[in-house]
Structure formats: structure tokens, C-alpha cells
Amino acid sequence: MTATRSPALARPEADPLTLETLPRRRSAIVGAIEWTRLASPEARRLRELGFDEGVAVEVLHRSRLGGGPIACRIGRMTVALRRAVARAISVSVEPLPAE
Image 1 (cartoon, one colour):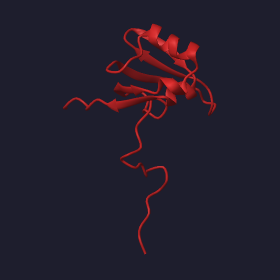
Image 2 (spheres, rainbow, N blue to C red; image 1 turned 90 degrees about the vertical axis):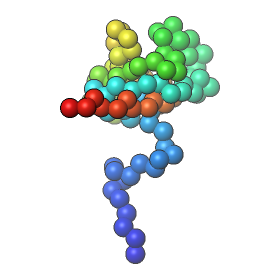
Image 3 (cartoon, rainbow, N blue to C red; image 1 turned 180 degrees about the vertical axis):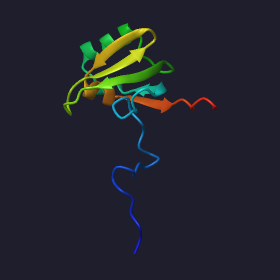
């Protein structure tokens, strides 16, 4: 018999971290944006706001309702994104500063 991890703790290495699943108050770098998953106006808005590969982002707040928007910081701006949009943005977590 093999031991299984809790679904909340199980995270396959191949499963990319997205802006939707990034922990609050954790800085990350945008690794990729799946532009094809976004409607043309949404993709244009993200580009106008400065979302692109290599940009630093941080999740500030999530709606208490499961499908509500996510507030994130990009540069000095705070932007609200729908979860479907945040799901299309892959991120990599920056290492925590040494204490």
C-alpha cells in the first residue's frame, strides 16, 4: 500500500503556478501568459496595463466568494483581475529574502 498526500498539499511539479493560485503577499515573476485563452479585449487590457513575461507581480487580495476577482500589484498599480484571466498567467515565485 502506498501513502498518498492530502489533495491540498499535493502539487505535481509539472503543474505550473498561476496568478490565481499564488499565495497572498508573495512576489512572483510572470513566466508566461496564455494569450489564446483570453478574449481579445482582455489580452489588450493586460498589455496596456504592462502585463508581460518577466514583470513582477504580487497578489494583494482575493474575494471571499470563490469566483470573485483577485487584486494584484504590478509596478505601483493595483489591478483587479477575473479569476479566469489570472488562471492564464503563469508565474514563478521569487526566493524569500534571507533572514
